[in-house]
Length: 97
Image (cartoon, rainbow, N blue to C red):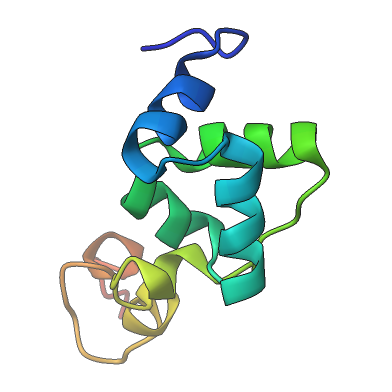
């Protein structure tokens, strides 16, 4: 894992996009790209992209991680009346008479 204070991010952005990291992140901002999408495009983790955006004073679009990642809405599954793999441990197992 690269050190957060190293210049690897800047060097890799210059190699991949032919621009400085600041210009690449500014382009992402202008296109409305989220941190998650930028992470997928650059190959760096979301937190690394956020850290470098903070350094340059850039704020990318904020999209809900769970929906952007294509995950199901777990809370809706937990509250279903039918037993499933999400709510099986939140049900009563003993019926008192």
